[in-house]
Image (cartoon, rainbow, N blue to C red; front, side, top):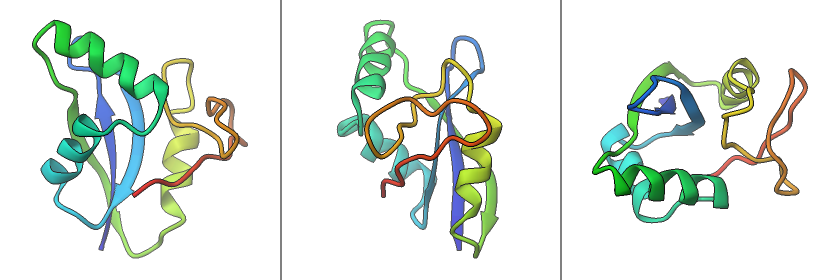
Length: 102
């Protein structure tokens, strides 16, 4: 089963990253925390660490469909989302394409 999840800013409750995994969500959060996938995540995590905080992780959906993650990225494709397109650009707008990391 694939778990689609969001990393949420603990200060304002805003979704900052959407991902999918077959792993336990706590395990996946620790993977992100120890080795951020992109510069945006590294910067955000650095800011949180300076305040003694970690992002929250929430389950958005469990599914067998590995295409569902893109729908959630599009739903949260706002100026604060840290997902990236394959060429390293931020995901923006309803047609945003993104890079799937595991």
